[in-house]
Image 1 (cartoon, helix red, strand yellow):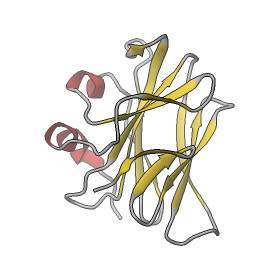
Image 2 (cartoon, rainbow, N blue to C red; image 1 turned 180 degrees about the horizontal axis):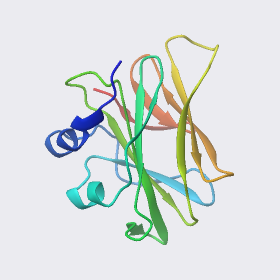
Image 3 (cartoon, helix red, strand yellow; image 1 turned 90 degrees about the horizontal axis):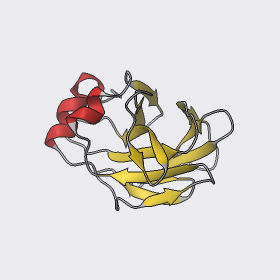
Image 4 (cartoon, rainbow, N blue to C red; image 1 turned 135 degrees about the vertical axis):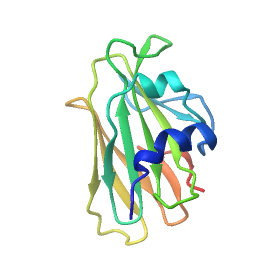
Length: 153
């Protein structure tokens, strides 16, 4: 399986990301997420290097926003964004923006899970004490901490 890699910016600019809505979903008192349909060029430019976490059938790419130029919304700061997909050519990932009222540091890692070979799970850490589960089920539906955020197409 290959990650989105170098083609990431082109894919973002030419194909919409798959998501349910652009409303904030509160995961904890300090962290919210937002399913996103697209990123603009300034958001790509003002983010850090691409980090990739690969599972068996799904891949999560994530970037943090540069601390000096983070977007703001409703008293929260943009922490970064995730693309969750299969890495297959022609597929469209689910996009998620992470918001926080604190300093944040994103880390995503695959999780071993004996419950199902069809489901894929990742651990999303936002700072030292905020940890959430990303799940991609056999039907390509994506959820974070039990909240549906989209379907990989």
